[in-house]
Length: 385
Image (tube, rainbow, N blue to C red; front, side, top):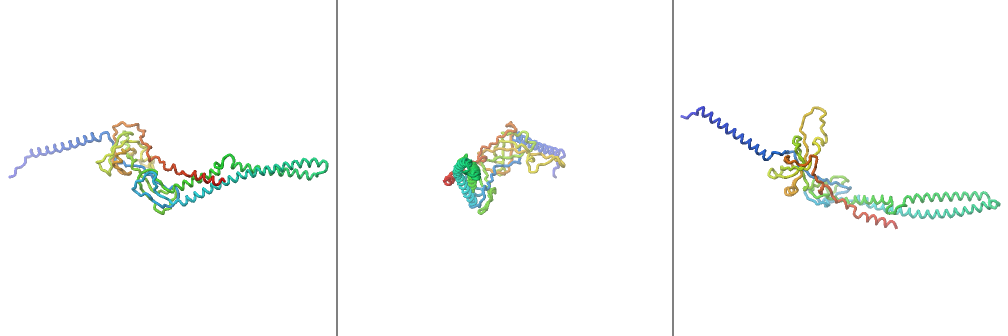
């Protein structure tokens, strides 16, 4: 016969099992608390964090037809590389027209200068004639007392004097008007010539910009244009993404933000690489407003029913350049980011963001007018003769 278990033994076994389960639960809780104490104490974390970078959109700066595409998506380009060529027919015609207008302006000033000399000679001629008529008038008046000259002849001579004086004033006024256009400056610096020179520079600049040049080094993305497309000034063509200047935009709840300060260290785990790879960064600054404040349609809690929702504040975290070089990232990747708030950091409103990198300035447009002044001087010299 099977031996029956006595009730006391059953109760004893159940109590022993309950003690073992309770001990296991206590050990798990202690282990979790110990892990939190050693790893997560003094840290705040969020999974609402993303890799961000500069997305530099290149647009056509002049009108033209695309005749060559020299860079494709995913390719790396260097600053100063030509990415797209436009035919430049319209800009070349505009440049030729502006150069012709400059030559015409120079010739017009030369013509006006010559006309001033002509008017001076006319004035001298009229003044000589006036002097002669005045002498005649004096003789006629003397002879009129003796009856040798009629009163009509004296009157005619006086009218002739007034006519010559009016002609001299008219010529002098014309000369003054022309002098106002050409006097006080050399032909090269005449206002009309300067205006024509500006049109040449503008047309030359548009002609130079038929080549779309990379302002920074980076990777090509979002190429939209195709061979044969007729593009207008301002049309987007492609984008350049410099992958050596990235950061993290982490959105923390307003209940987490109190202890965050610029200068504090951060650990970043990127979903694309898993938990094994950790990037290290530093808080560079805190956005001066919640996300809803900068939304396209900000919320208006003064109307309707109000539901309290915890707002989020964006924190910018800089990444280690060497880590980025060893394990490249792309803007838009999701991350889990945590910040060590046990460090005092810097004042809340300070910022360590630097704008000294190549993505904040470029010099490729500084020499676009090279050669135009020589062309202008050649045009002026050839039309001054």
